[in-house]
Amino acid sequence: MRRLLAAAAVLTIATGLTACSSSTETQGQGPGSAGGTPSTKLTVWIMRDSISDALVQRFTSDYQSAHAGTTLDIQVQEWDGIGQKVTSALASNDAPDVIEVGNTQVAEYAASGGVKDLTDKTTDLGGADWLPGLAEPGKIDGKQYGIPWYAANRVVIYNKDLFEKAGITAAPKTRDEWIDITTKLNKGGDQGIYLPGQNWYTLSGFIWDEGGDLAVNDGTTWKGGLDTPQALAGMDFYKKLQALGDGPRDSDEANPPQADVFAKGDVAQLISAPGGAVAIEKANPDLKDKLGFFPIPGKTADKPGAVFTGGSDLIIPEASKNQDAAYEVVKALAGEKFQTDMAKEMSYVPNRVSLAGVLSGSEGAAAMAIGAANGHATPNSPNWAAVEAKNVIKEYMTAALTGDAAAEAGKASQSIGEILNTKS
Image (tube, rainbow, N blue to C red; front, side):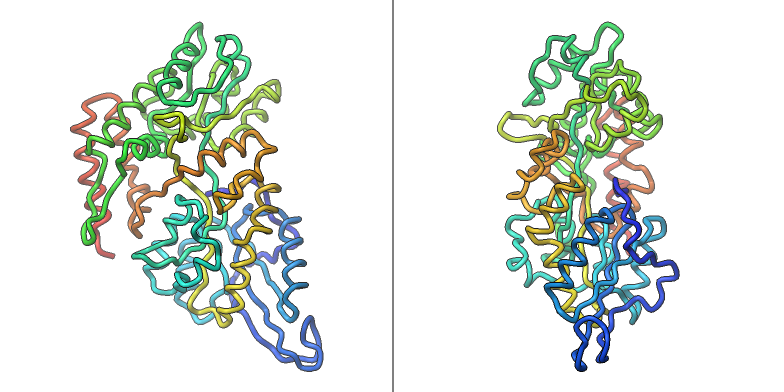
């Protein structure tokens, strides 16, 4: 997923990405090498816009001070083409020591056999406290390859003026309350909510709330899950909510950009990551300080609605020449100190449930953190990217909103199963 802030000057931007591996040298010069003491250089790949320049500087300085003889070479990678770049690095003898990857990419990389199994480290890393939706994609066949780093998920952004005009004084806590207030907001030329027909991440949350899933694996075979009673119930709720606004049924939140639609001032709500508020205010500065946030409501008031947890994991390549030292870097990046610092500076959800409170100073981030406690991930298959690329769920949603949902769900589920069961 694309990040919110650029990490620039202090990062070494890797272009050719050759000679990227770590090294251990015995020299008489350089940090930690006086008198012939070995000096370890660790290469860390961080994705463009993941963390700020200041945050990288603090981490690098603190880490090197605490680990005499270790030098961190943090290199920025671009999202475009990163899949092939990481796959090639994992298959080489010249891999970096630590790599940030999208949480839904771990299964694909682990399938290559080039990612270190870190299952025996999960207790040391506080794994029992990890966000489920961030930890689960990093676990393949019972083994933990990806270590949760940070998360982001969707919330409801609302127009405070329109809520006030409709006499709504409190955010809804349940789905039923949400439908009620959205119905009140959807009148007088105002849209109760702008929800395009192909926002499939939001649909996924409704399906998970009902106890369903996008696909399931019986141990040997994948089966699409959109045609189950639970998934159809989730689609039915989506249809009711989507009808309380003028969102197009045949496009997603990017076409047209939903922030631009909301910025016109006649939309009461939309579903987005909190960062969507920045785009709204840029399009219409008059809405500054008029935007509120609340977690997507669940079926009952005691639990927020399920959400897709996007974010990043950290992996260690098998080809790293300093795996023990690389693990110490992962431990620091995934640890409480850095997680707290990163959450406060970047407004990301930290990887631990117990750290959600560090975001209390930001209304949007705090709402996101509440929802993250009920976070989920897409099916853990190396072929899931192909399901997304072929727009199977998006096309199903449009067909379900305009026709027979059950019949269309059967067709889509069959397609999902065929894709996930394809042997590479």
